[in-house]
Length: 270
Image 1 (cartoon, rainbow, N blue to C red):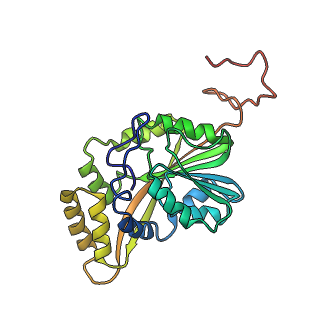
Image 2: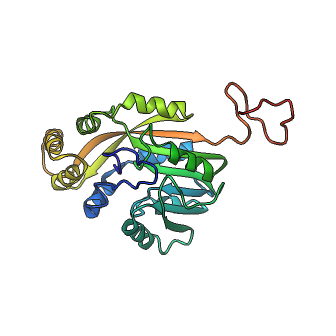
Image 3: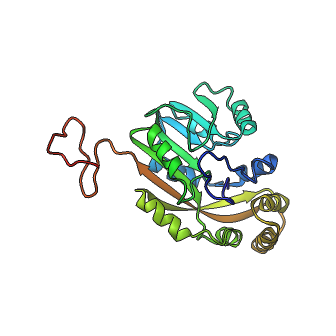
């Protein structure tokens, strides 16, 4: 999970990610452990297949997800606010001709208007009220008919969500879901497994994701879930929020109206 502990950034502010910015090697373990069965990738592809399309991965970190998109997409642009991570992302994709990486932030995306078919953000920046500037930017860079896909952790899902709520007592999962619904997003819940080679890997990841107090609680619970030696698995829930940019004029309670078919009798937007 990236950028979550402090919530959305204020206008013009880049909020440091307390895990990958300062513990990149451990976060690499976390990236490998997450979604080992590919459930999130299947859900994202079903909602917005990127084959032959132009993808913008917002908050791409060190570029872990970029090669997955690049295998099928026409082009991929990774945007990351932290220059050291952006440099690592560039190194990761240096042999992929259809991928570029730029330093930038969600509130001011370094991409042209209507230049992407899919804007993807995975556990980066978009956490409900306060993220409106990023949502406006996503809408700006999308072509009509394009999709914003926001993948975040399901804070109502146990046990991981319980640990998050303990560290984020003011975070209100139902309010976040209402916010996205009011912004026109659908919500799809996805159950996944994290899988670690051993308990030491799991422990190292939990220590960068939670406060010391909550991390110790999580470590104890994971130990109970995995009492024997060998690999460690952990159920983790996600939400996949999707919103399609209209291809024409859309008003509440009305169907889309293309510019060609609009007339002087069309409803006005004030």
